[in-house]
Picture (cartoon, rainbow, N blue to C red):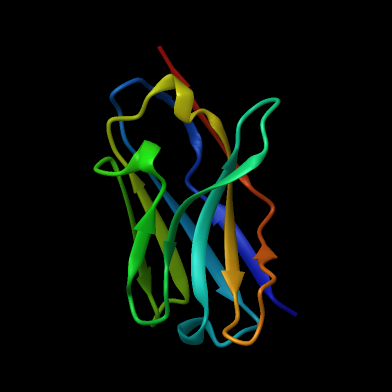
Length: 117
């Protein structure tokens, strides 16, 4: 079955950086659109960044210019480089995978990112 395992979360001071990783298994990674979402306390889960199988990317306005999504198909891994972190970036970050034949995502278990002021 599909498994997505996130890593790289933690506690960082405002202005700092973190890189999240999501290792995928049980699927043809290169054919899937991959994404990162986040859920802040008492808020809904929102899209942060996405990358298609062809490498096209899109970002939420709140993170444009600060976050970069990338993928390594040889390693079945998607990354989220987060720079200039702000306290409002504090959230649980989730990796998502969407096969080309579906509108439904597979989800990872999430990794906590906490940005202190």
